Image 1 (cartoon, rainbow, N blue to C red):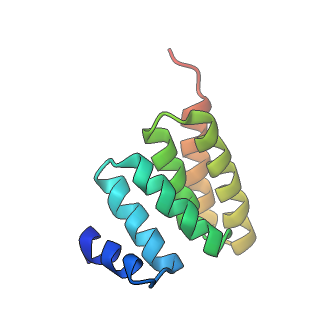
Image 2 (tube, rainbow, N blue to C red):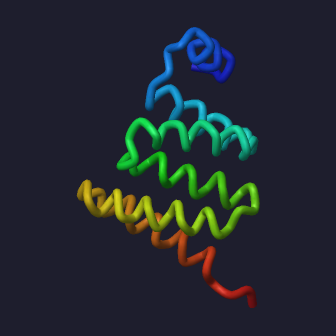
Length: 105
């Protein structure tokens, strides 16, 4: 489904976690970080334990230059992933977090 279709669904009041997650992912792919952040935060308002939304939110925040917020998103995502038993997602977010905190050469 394309962004326009999803935005139309949202405008019709069909708001949901999956719709917001989908919009966030599409905007992230298009490097529209600010819109991605808005939709991914909305997805997390539906379910703050949605591991994949935390992971994409961290990426969107990183892309927008909001490094401290990205670190927080990854930390929260790691907690959510561990609580849900999503070991691989937790490992991936630890790698992303480490890259953010690694000093520049």
